[in-house]
Image 1 (cartoon, rainbow, N blue to C red):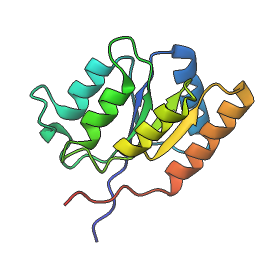
Image 2 (image 1 turned 60 degrees about the horizontal axis):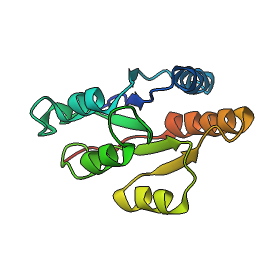
Image 3 (image 1 turned 45 degrees about the horizontal axis):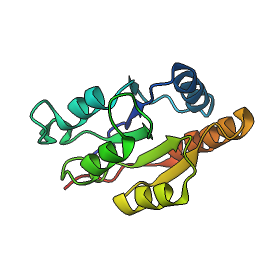
Image 4 (image 1 turned 180 degrees about the vertical axis):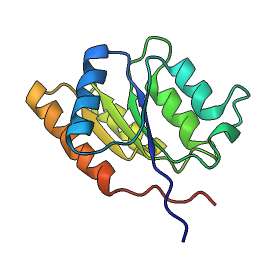
Length: 147
């Protein structure tokens, strides 16, 4: 029987405090999946789509992407667009974590294929709670096979 491959969590977050909080709450929810952190979009996209940008690098990978929209080098919306328009990464769930609660921005992210949109840091407690729920979501989630 083919066992499901473990899902790697790609965390694209430039704020070190937020990154630590996210990781802590994911672990607290009992999710032990590998977390691969990136602090900018350039490195994250190179990992996700490969140096050639084809996306072949992620063929067969099971990924869940945590994406901050406000990054030092590019907008998270651009990353979302690239990930969701690539045949190798488009099925990877993307969770947008951002300080922006602009309804047009939220709608745009959903239109581009974001799975969940979380505004941070609403209040530390609210953010921690959202991340805890996310951890529970991860622990029950299986990423679909890419065919």
